[in-house]
Length: 363
Image: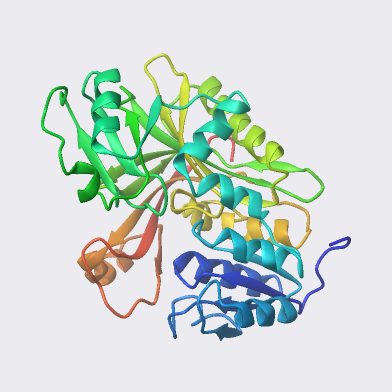
């Protein structure tokens, strides 16, 4: 694109989950229409979008229809087939660029990319059989997290090892699906944080304040802002996010997760080339949310100022937590967002709420 996207234009969104839903809502506030490509009919995003194309993400005819109908295409999750994104990019602008998908979809490739631009990560080793797992565990003194290289999320496709040197590992690789794996060394971190950052087509950069994240059963439970970290650590996290975006010639919002070590230094855990769960608090505590920021970026509009007006805690509603809705709505200074999912299941994100606290310092 060479000019800002005109109001009334159509933005295509691949993926119909809650992130696509919130992107469609943000797009509507700025006067844009949205088309969702998603195989599940009546998905959460389709409930608020202008139209849905019900088809697989790699369906050739559906991709052609999406490209023909959209002025620009984006996506809500990082497991979009790279070939599909490249095919779309030949027909219509696609942001973030397909290269970001290619890097983020494979944990080994991701770490090689990060280390190659000078951003440290935990030590890791590729694992393609039980023998390689034994060797890698020995290298890390029996302690590590075994993960699938591709398609894992919310703690799925992971197994923790502690003091496992010399143990019987036969059948472990097969039990993990017989797919390419990676063993990551356990990191003695003090806390986990994340940064939500954005880059425009003109190279402009904005980063929200880091959030302190707490996980339960591999799923994000809460994100608290401000994070309990030194200003220098916060600045270093934002600088790392900037380096990633510039190296990828990125357009859009990204979420970058970090381990904070005892001395305040950082290791990147992973990057997500999309709006991110740990940035949902921006919807309630900032004038410009991460969702609007992403729409601004892909529409070639000026990026918004990411300052927050309140400190806050965002909490996910998982499974039957959604039944807390009436009680939550009785609380003051609370912003609730449900995702329109018909069925609650264990481990399924049904919504979130953000509890606003005292005004942010200097607000």
